[in-house]
Image (tube, rainbow, N blue to C red):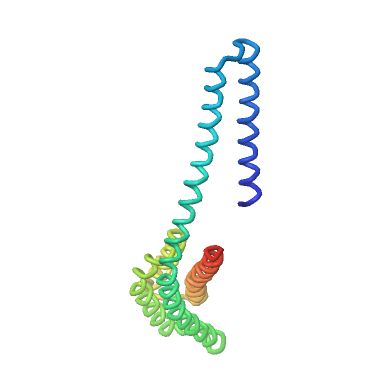
Length: 197
């Protein structure tokens, strides 16, 4: 448990304790003590403590179940992300060649246009795999990049600025996939390590 959770639970226990002291003080002054009152107070305290323990138990169980589900699916997702990473790693190399060619020989619209069409097709072919293995936020980001690349592919003529835009988008797509794979791998090993103990 981290410090914030311990602080939160300590605060709740403190509030419940103060409430019990106030209630006990009120009853002892106003009503007086009787066997029924003492039994009721003990039952109340038992219910509060039992509810708190049940709540913590359910949280721990759900957290453990989520980790187990993650570990069951992580290998398959890691394999898929490795596959995507290899595909877009090749595209990253290809786009580096385009950039090198652009810097050395100037702008070649035909070469860039052909590459944009090829990259658009690769994105389209792998889209289902991305939806299954990336988070919702990562897919939203990729959708923006795909729309941008799609708009570039539909232009009648490409400008020199479009070359840098294509290069940036390919790099960003690769970065999203790489970061997702890296995060998944870190979480996998973290949960696997926690599971041993």
